[in-house]
Length: 280
Image 1 (cartoon, one colour):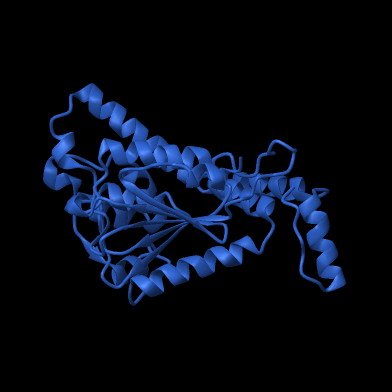
Image 2 (cartoon, rainbow, N blue to C red):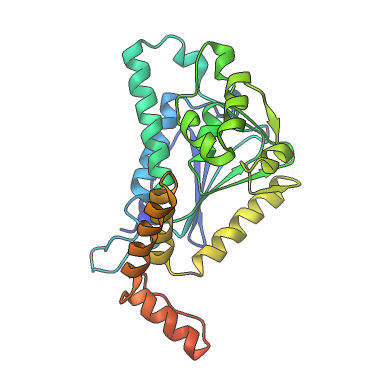
């Protein structure tokens, strides 16, 4: 059974899942709590993204499983992407319980970040605390004009725990990350785009989802193995000095030569036709 078929068979209480044209839409669905990341939401997101980690591997007959070529992560209800961690639940946890909860959430963000296919965060409202951290694990963040971003944990006597102290400075630089984390300030979509957190701002949810699907369609027209390799190289090189990063890039580039996707892509270019990538 393909990854897409496995996901279509999942029964989730806090997520809405849709597979259409090889694009999976994952919608966090707790509108009564502004889609806050309860332990149940984290567990169901982990189940979905753990299945997605199998993309590109050989199926039962030896063919690569590229049944899903991209993921859109969003929230339901129109007011929030994910408003944050579930503070009501978290405040009564013991230190060991919160360690487990946070460890699960952090591991989820790594699974999202390291998927072989692109993940677009379609932020349609509040992306605060854990919601901002969830979005930053994605490859691209698109936002509607009513979106708002922030890491307000200091107002609760806490600090970001799902990757905000790490990824926010990778997105916006150390100075802006310090300012946002230490003040807890909430910023609108336009400012988030200006400082480099958001790639695109769209007028409404319809345009937002359309833009996310269009970007994934562009990626899906490329070699899936090259996309996966590019994602790995970008992640591996992001914190390295230039010389070390260039060495990572060199090896990843050289490793593409002789692969079936590279052979097909270069042949299609020379022959002036659309490539038919085997995904190998």
